[in-house]
Length: 421
Image (cartoon, rainbow, N blue to C red; front, side, top):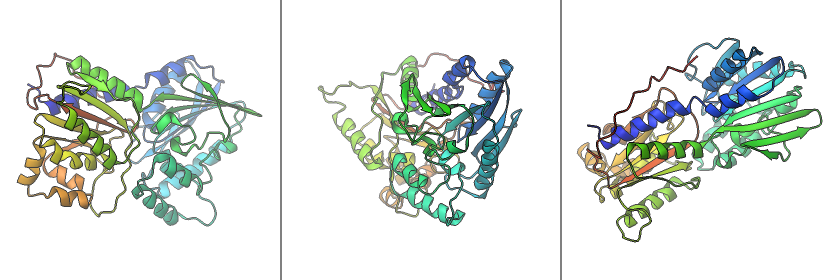
């Protein structure tokens, strides 16, 4: 019989597999009108999967293509016909990223105006796709990035600063392109799906766009840019809540995008737990609440951890006071600041487990060493084999028995590689 941890994690993993087929991307690619020759550029942590689905659609329609995939190290799942795959450093840029970006820039400059340019962009592009201005070297850029990552600033604030130190960000890469038709399909990891913020907006014009379904159209003197959002945090969270309902949970999706700090969101969760058993609370236990967004974390300690594990560690003392409660914190890119860490989960028993392992929760939190602490009690969640990049997802479970929430319906297991081309 499945316990709560197994049920929640398996539901998340199964959704992740379906989500990474990006059905909206496939639908748009099947219906768009393209020139006989399409140039493809995929950037970001979701670049390989987006590219594989896109060229499969182009090939089905008999449309010629070539291009590049630039993704994070070890995020490529193999060769793709007609595309050159490059990998680089993330979250800190490296020499591979600068060399790859130089190749891509030369290729972009050579694309004739008659050929359509297809841009596939996802989170992570800011670190991967970069060309430096005079007076700034890789060491200097890396130091800027390190300070930004520890600053607790939002993605929008960080990307504005990144754009000031780049020859590609803030629409500068678009200025290198002659193509009359530029189509951008994006997997969004930013609040409001702002095209100027997503990936630091290398191909987003610096002018207002006309709103179209799930995106914007930009009309330039010799160029039209269509920008479409094909997946985002809201879509993932709403689908996760729906899947949990199908499992038998009383699931509720809190639709507001989280942009408060880890500490502020921890206070929100503590207040929910305080009120959960009140007869006047809007949700009656047992229930599951799904939240999504990005909770910035200002880091000042020497330890290892990420936003998800730090939030989880911050709640262990409170959860210990409430039987049959659990919190799941998922990093949808499969990397909660540490390779292999897909997030963390804690429940009513975690404080006792930490004490039994000789871990001082307060010291671990003070030192920002949440990964080490939670790994010691097997509370770090493994990264999915397939992952997207649509911010973080949080699931608060109240009132479900941790060992036997209910008998689940039988369901098929997914083959994680069945749809890979």
